[in-house]
Each structure stands twice: as structure tokens, then as C-alpha cells.
Image (cartoon, rainbow, N blue to C red; front, side, top):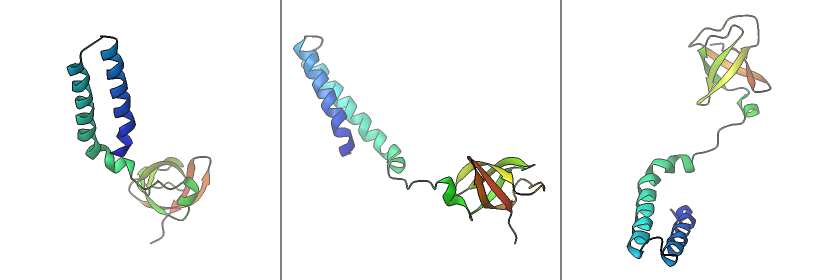
Length: 119
């Protein structure tokens, strides 16, 4: 919640300027600040998981990990690795079917190079 203090200070400053220039009265300034604080209190539980989430792995860190084919690779398609959707290309000429397990064997630009996971 301390991350919200600067925005509260800005609302207070704008309210002070508005009252000083007679754009609105003191009750409007206090109501605006109260509404802003209530908004932050409501939104904090919604946004908290995203503020403190662990960083997602970089593409190079995905090598050796397993994933699932989301859209058949013939030779390109999409896979899900470490909870993220990635464009992928099969390492060989074989078609990797949707739902199959794959292993990341390389990276070219932002396309993962994958092969069928041996069971």
C-alpha cells in the first residue's frame, strides 16, 4: 500500500490547488481524496498477486524444459512451456500433434526449437 502514497500526495496537492483557485470547495477536495483511497483499497487485493509475482524465465532458460503442444507443429506452431505460450518449430521434419509433450532443445530469435519428448 505504500506504493500508493505518492498518488495520494498528488491528489492532495491538486485538491489544495483547486480549493485555492476556487475551482471547488474543501468538501469536494476531501471527497476526491477519500474516493481515491477507497479505489486503491479495492484494487490492491486484485493487483497484489501481479505486483509480487516471480519473474518468468527468459527464453534461454527454457532449454531442457518440457512443454505441451497447443497447436500442431508442422513444422511451426505453438507450445506452452513454464506456463507461457511460445511460437515453436519442430527440430525435425516430423509433425508434432496437439497435446503432445515436447522438450525445448534450442532457440532461434524468439522461436523455441522443440523435439518430441521421449517417454
